Image 1 (cartoon, rainbow, N blue to C red):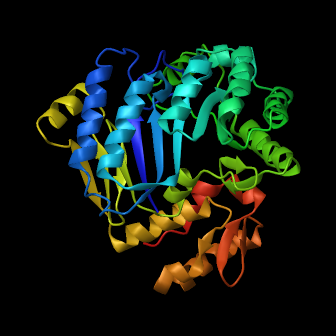
Image 2 (image 1 turned 135 degrees about the vertical axis):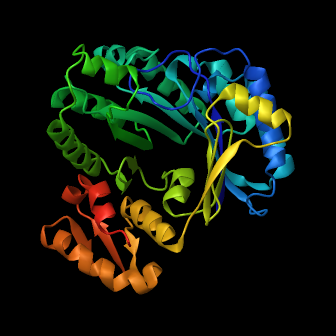
Length: 369
């Protein structure tokens, strides 16, 4: 199952915590869309003509694009890559961009899944994050979205320095009450060179408390399990049959093509990433060149990537995929099995709830040399 990701690098304003590649200037938007269309043509052979089962417009804020631009991009994709009528086509959107006119246009363009950047249903928290919308706008946007789409995901953030468990619970309960099919829930991360990192370093904001984040993650798992959500990946929860097909393909090691500045691609043996600069990207594409760097993965690196991604899912690591490394991994995993962080049977190894708090560290300790 091959996937296509398009990076739309524009935002109305910068969230304090964000370290993704984006610009708050919307000038050059048309030129960027033209470059995206050209890159789709230039890289039509990258996936070796595998059919596309998922298409994902991410960013940035793709909902800032005019509907006509989305239509033109999908038309170019259709010309260069085959995808069937059942393909999952996701658009990331912010609540403040969601109007009835836009929802109708997105649906007409072929979008069949929305991923909405809610982050919180608490106005104080939204202001702290420097989000462009209010809690009321979020609720209105979701009610509107449900009139046009039956596959909706929202992003939520927990572990803010001054966020109480009661505030976190209120946000989660609001999402449950709205019957949102898919929730992506992330602990606040302080990334280098972001406004958040500077504000914490200069003591304008309180520091993040890892213990509180762990507590709120455990509470989240408890609340959503009771509400009928499947915790199918560390940060992702879904009602039955509403898992993200696009993101699941990443965790399952499927091939994907990334289009746009800073977009990543993977073909099974190499990773590529485009330049994170809009002007340089547009200039290179105009010269019929894709401006990317590449890393060729050794067999050991491929094995380690599988361990890292598979362990994040509720399916866990499938032991038959490890070949000669199977017995060594089982020996390495024994201490985590003894401490109750991992479970194992004849087919697989997977994380317990407590193990999910330490997922990255456990995965790293299981890596092949």
